[in-house]
Length: 461
Image 1 (cartoon, rainbow, N blue to C red):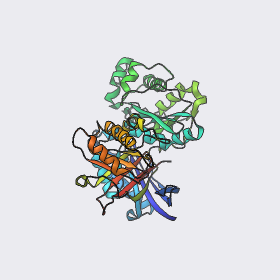
Image 2: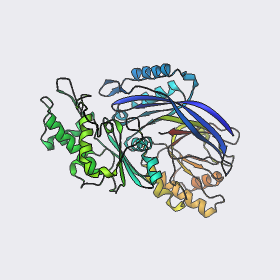
Image 3: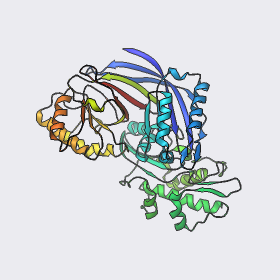
Image 4: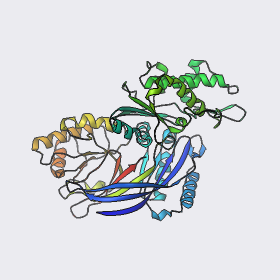
């Protein structure tokens, strides 16, 4: 067993704010019971937390990359950690910011500047999942064996994840946030999100004049009621349906309700200036707290609120696939492939498509990999069943079919998949690799008969 210490950086570029965290991770390499090399994070110490600053924009549609980069450089100087000493990290862009025209360019350029890191432009479903992990809702659900719904209320969106005994059941998002309306120091509205114009019309609100507290309270109360509705505590209204960014949701009953995000910071706070940030964030937090008052016994407070999305980035775990594998050299190398694992525990091969589709829907990526343990000594019928389920899962996914197995039968499965395809398509099937949901995968060029693989793990608080 070997122990190492590595430095990690996390950059979260959100709708309202941007922040940076630098951590020192203790990494331990061990052999599992199945003799698969595993890299785990034994301990984490936060070295530096940046101030939380407003995300810089050049205009309404463009992120100011140069200012974001300067903020990162300043963080490195203040942390006294040289860029060359940081060996892992994540650049995450979330909320309304992920919809900006140059969002991908910003994450790609910043990641290139920092190093070989995970780059994820988080759409509403993935952001909901990240916030659920980062807030601590996932851990609490697992520890308490209960269903917890986490509402991460940011500047532009509310991202909701539901965890049942540690398993994420569903994610969805709505256009509800603290910066949907902004005003100047004289009370004039200087920004109004087009996404809530229909709601203002329905409520008979006109913001062409100065901001009126009573009118703002009517709006924030209505948005708060929408959150009650999506928590299945009130009947879902037509107006709330229009606020969904993603496709609706399946009604559920939660044991506990958790709130994170910048607006979550102000829930229950007293004697706070309601116009502190020249937007509706503080008032919205106050109204949500009041609307959820009848359900106070269900509310739990997470470890993290405004810093929920990402605390640090995990470890690069270089491993080598087994030699009995299938791959198409022409499409290698591939980088930053999200990994989905349909099963957390016991695998039922008949449910690969059914459960895999639920996990697949959380990603807006056109390139994904499915990860399975698989039987130790599978029969031909089992391999054929797995192959057909995987082909069905990848029908609406562009790019190659990528399969990662823990057990050693990648070549047989890859050949079955290739033979049963209706049209020619690249297939990569690797084995002797252990992964988790939330991991990202890099696949390098072949070395002799094996493939070098980097598993990248996002680390949440």
